[in-house]
Length: 259
View 1: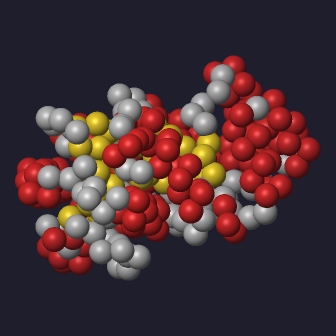
View 2: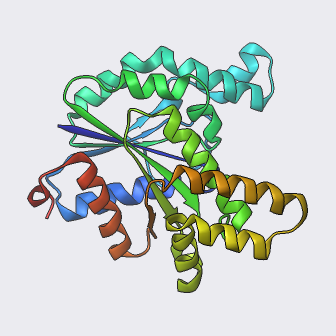
């Protein structure tokens, strides 16, 4: 059974770092397990790991800009749409690796993968044969320290969950090594108790932001809880243990294979 996980999140939330680190983590646990990474960001310049399958082998952002005489933003949108033309090639390369795990690093601008037709179509098209899929949505710890930032990210996570509604999703609080334990506890509490989030919004925000945040947090209170927020730092092994455990439970894997 091939397990595919898509990392989705805002620019700078840690998708690429987590993709590379999770591959290393799994291989360190059991070198016999086959893990590959896929980069689906055609415009990325630097990556902290070397992807096994790279959309840049098929689509070069600068060439799209020159061919269609458009700027970088327009080229990113067009490049994202052009990805669907290479689904068969990506599937073929996955077949050649015959992996146990596939970790997919999506574009820095999450709307290119999540809110256009490209992302759901790719996720659907790669879901062939003996494959299980999951989505990991990343909450940037520095961005969600204030209630309005947390609520904004929560809305994005809910939108992604709606767009990929047939795929189980986990939410990950990234870069927890950059904030202190009290801040981690505060954010996790917000994710589990929307009344606490509403109270914090009322205390810490003001003006129109406060009013809008209160209205939105009230919506989440009525909706009930969302996916549990998992704290994670790629620099701390116990964090990677926790994350990998959640992924294993999603895929209902045989844990003895990895330990």
